[in-house]
Length: 472
Image (tube, rainbow, N blue to C red; front, side):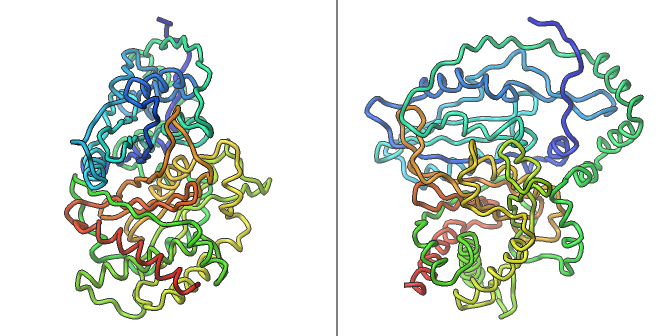
């Protein structure tokens, strides 16, 4: 084993904030559910384990764990996990065959309810067998402190290819570096404090539960909208803003990209506008189904993370994606009964952001080399996590995905659903991804506060149908 040498990499203030802010009711991991058709050659746990074993060399962060500095003198550091056990992180689960989608998504809710073990590398992947129609599902969990979009992407991207081929094996001779001692961690912190005295004060204060302040100081792109967020006059309330429990429910909606394109062709705007209009329609019906009085001017405030162009170069770089996501407030007009007017309200609001010249169109994102929707969902959740959850009702992330099939080995991915984490006192988060002609919604909800999330998912599908029918 290598001896300890040099200073280990320290977590950024933003990454550390997600660890500080995490508690038992609000775990800070982002998830994904990918469903595959099982090939004739099979697709099982041992094959998946082999894929990860030969590809982790590309993502060294997934073999590192977080170690705190004594006394909070500095932010935690990343160190190699000398006891790294791949079989702990890549796990096997099964449904009683033939397992239904309802059983799968109930399992997803239970898996997402459990915080990751902070004493180990902060990710888990489950292969779920037993699904009806000879399908297999992969469920991923990755902590927001890990995915920065610069050096580390979301774990699910690691095993996906654009062709049903086996990648060339990488000769992985990884040897963990020796973990620094407590004394060394303190000496490193003191050395940094001598160079940057303000860092010592900032780190001790962060350790004393002022992590949110630290996060706010490092959100470069998102900082541009802080003044707008502060200007929000009303504090969201209602059934979406309640104290959340430890448990989750997960539901999905399946729609077609051509339907959204038809809406865009008829009314202008973007596919993302139509997605937000569909979410608005679903939320309207859901509120009414609960007996909530919905006035004509009623809105639900969504925080919508969006990729933005670099202010200097005017380009979007996959290598700089971690610094290129900002979050915007959008008031969803749930009080408007007319689906076309809902769409027009949203298109007008989103146009203000697009007019800034920095928002990136879906078509541009889908052509970025190495772009992965799961990674952008993770970055969107990170951007949203830097703002006070008292000024919006829910997070809605929408990431365009590839319109060609993806494969894990010989297994073709047939659908994919994002799982966005809940913030404190927010009972619902919505993730949307387009892939291979489909648009897939993932509804992550508090188990008690939104016990009828399955109904909300069906209402989303109906809302899309309603919009499409107006365009035909």
